[in-house]
Image (cartoon, rainbow, N blue to C red; front, top):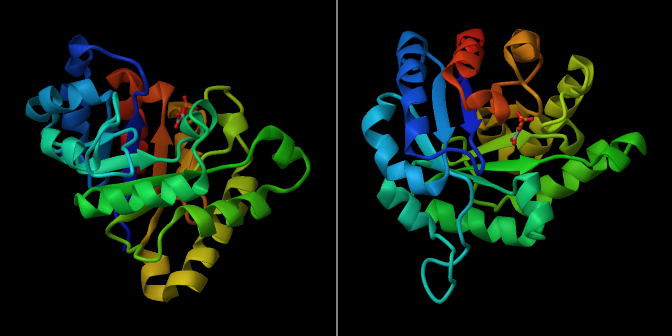
Length: 245
Ligand code: PEP
């Protein structure tokens, strides 16, 4: 059985005052069996540890090298040292804003695993690719190139995030989400074998909110969600956690 996962990506939002939101989220996490993960700005991870309780904490990116002359960057070990157990890699905003390639994401994944972090690797097609019916080709390519061979159900989570659905209020139909998640599952099984392929958790991300969470969570091979905007406030995120339980 795969443990359900409600993951929040706070992106570049929040100062220490935002950590107040964690207490109601922690209460919701305590009540259910789903795992809850919050990826705040890295500056908040160490201070979040006290208030997080059962909530796991994650970074939003890491460097692919363990240390060195990389001004402004953070290593996976630094995130782990601050209290993170996860790191999001290959988010479409990193792929776009920082021109991150699949090869770089694969290296970051290895760096994360060396530091003991679990990687949440994001894949997803742009609107042009979706409209050209290229979704599965794009996702297949990103999976093949962004994920190292050493993946396991413990160290890897895959998040399917259509770029056109992130922060836009647009969401694919549940049929479309199910088709992509089934495809990801079959690709993972083919590459890593049934044991590993079936144990990796698959999250949907892109404009998830309380109103659509339940329907999405009933979809084939959806093990939870990666949530941006609706993870910032407990009043928005708690109903999503509850929908998963
Ligand atoms: C995200 O940034 O990963 C995301 C899914 O954002 P939102 O929920 O705001 O669409």
